[in-house]
Length: 192
Image 1 (tube, rainbow, N blue to C red):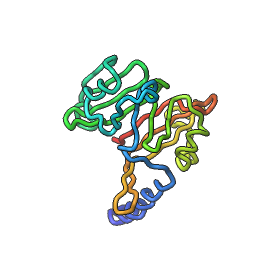
Image 2 (cartoon, helix red, strand yellow; image 1 turned 120 degrees about the horizontal axis):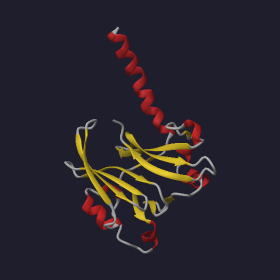
Image 3 (spheres, rainbow, N blue to C red; image 1 turned 45 degrees about the vertical axis):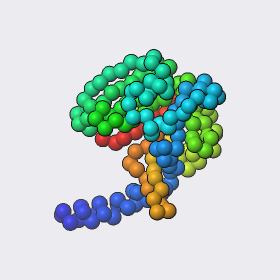
Image 4 (cartoon, rainbow, N blue to C red; image 1 turned 90 degrees about the vertical axis):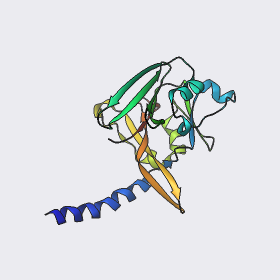
């Protein structure tokens, strides 16, 4: 029986990994999250992947935030949650000094890709489809509340190595409103 289960896992694992090619991907250092008013003002940009601690977040987004430290039993790590009342939440790993997850819920912040594309809460699904066409085509009902009528799609984090794209098991989720299909939330996800 064990051999049969191992055989099934070995058969399905590559199919699951190859299925990610149906989605767009983004490198962790290919975007910024900036205050929307600073996008036009030419403020010094720190790539989101380079935000390693709350002090760097304060330099980028200001000192108007609340902070809470806690231990996550699932990941067995200490975290520092930084919440900006204007619609941005950052979760930093205390020990390893890196940004673990982020969430944007207002148009006070803009996700700027290194190719110049801008993603902002309130933008239309059509505009998002131009930036992430494969992922947008795979959008599904938002699962935490399927009756809400909201839709979501994901964009995997990836790297290019030796001419191949390698997808990670982490991604950014884009949630579209039920009413008019506009973007209402963006967050990164790390499965646990």
